[in-house]
Image 1 (cartoon, rainbow, N blue to C red):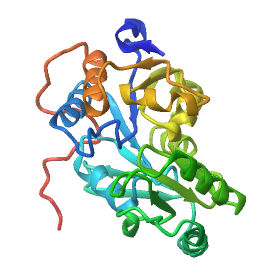
Image 2: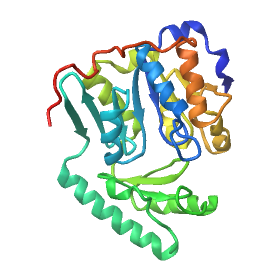
Image 3: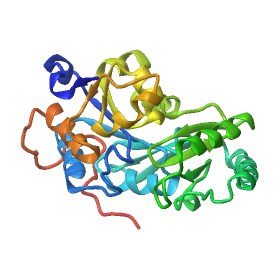
Image 4: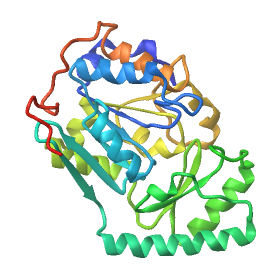
Length: 283
């Protein structure tokens, strides 16, 4: 991984989209610092289209799509995307599977978790589980003492043997039914909403993340960045980002925002086609 400061000005000039993970990429020590939000605003005001790509639940993603200066959110590791059209005061929600299939999968995942608890009685679902529609998230360090790596690996293997797709983030083990991932739904989002194909996306987009569940993105996109804290996962990953920031988490994200905007001052007002109109808000 090269230092972010070596990112070529020619690359910077051609970046129109910024895709970013959430936990430990935008956040720092479990919080969203002002620096991260300032970075989002700076990128948006410079005309960059930001899409958050996360393992977090639908309930969180609805809020992020509606209130943050972003074009949309891919959530639950690729189960859906949400986009709030501010000019129309309208939320677009696209799920990979219909409600009946999601309900069936949730039942199956709940049974898998109950089975896991027989071997690992101290396992706990993440506190955001009640807001999820397609997967389960097992807490490995967010609100519980860190699980040993060998336990995490054993849980992952047991879930995979029972047919689940599994990814480990910096805070959760996420498991779902189906072969989707962050990249597959992001590709659908880009095609649906921007008519942007894979070949062009590789040239005009940059992805920033922090952990093994970002590997499909690191492997696919030409321009990729890891925040400094990715270094703790290097030995576990096959696909690494090309660049790394000096700072961790949200401070590293601000570092990227400064590089992509060349340190320019924020613009006012916010520009862009997907911004709130001046028409009265409908309740």
